[in-house]
Structure formats: structure tokens, C-alpha cells
Image 1 (tube, rainbow, N blue to C red):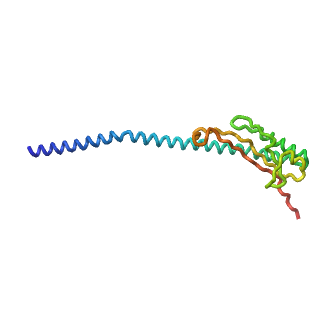
Image 2 (cartoon, rainbow, N blue to C red; image 1 turned 180 degrees about the vertical axis):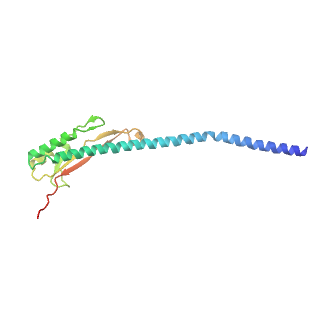
Image 3 (spheres, helix red, strand yellow; image 1 turned 90 degrees about the vertical axis):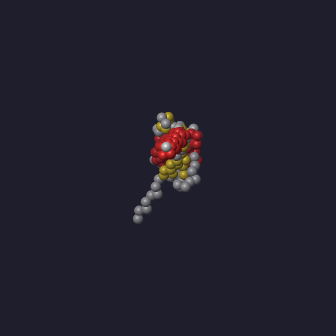
Length: 178
């Protein structure tokens, strides 16, 4: 009898421990779901931020390509005279207006084309350059601000970011022939 009572007590003790373990697991069951949800949300936000940043890089590259092409077109119009300054500005504006950003045309003002004698400047407007055109060798073109929408990181970065690009082109220094 005593042996069977001891076995019964041992059995009850073991079953009680199992029940406590089951109850403990039941109380922790929702923590996996919450942890997984937070993990998935953070991964989704990281991917979204990557998409937004890649869109910024793509737009900046498009703007830089347009600015480079416009500056090269402008410098090809320089001829040392007032007509060359006007032709350079016309070529820069025409070249820039051939580009589309986000499937919309770019309105490029003539004021965004600047001229200089030296690479480091000072840069002057079309009107100022027309007054003294003989030594003008450099053209600097700045694209107008282009709004890039932000999809995923709008809370941090705002609904859009403005990007622009600047390019400078000029005649190279002539070679000295001995």
C-alpha cells in the first residue's frame, strides 16, 4: 500500500509539473507572433528605404546626364563673339528640353546657363557674357529642381525630395607645339 501511495504521489507530482509546463507555453505562445510581426515590419521598411534611395540615385544620374549633354552642347556653340554666347545658350536650352523626367518635360530657363573665362569662375549670365565674349571658355549648366516622390520613407524624408545637377564644360587648353 505504501509503495502504491508513493507511486501515486510521484505520478501526481509529475503530472502537475507537466501541466505547469503546458500552461507556461500557452502564456508564451503569442510572443512568437509579436516578434515575427516586428521582424517582418522592419524588413519591409528596410526594403522600402532601399527602393526610395535607389530612385534618388536613378533620378540624380538622369539629371546629371542631361546637364552634361546640355553643357557640352552649349560649349560647342561658343565662337568668341556675342552670337556665340546666344547660340551656346540656345543649344543648352534645346538640349535640356529634349529630356523627360518622370514622363514629364523639363522647363529649362536660360538663366540656368552661366559663362566664365576660368573654370573656377566667376560665372556670369548670358547678358554679362555677351558684353565681353572674347575670352569665354567655360559653360556651367544647372538643371532645375526635380521633385522625386518618396514612397516608403515618407515619414522620415517627407513626401518628395528635390534633386538637381550641375555640369561644367569648356575648351581645353591648347597644346604648346615646339
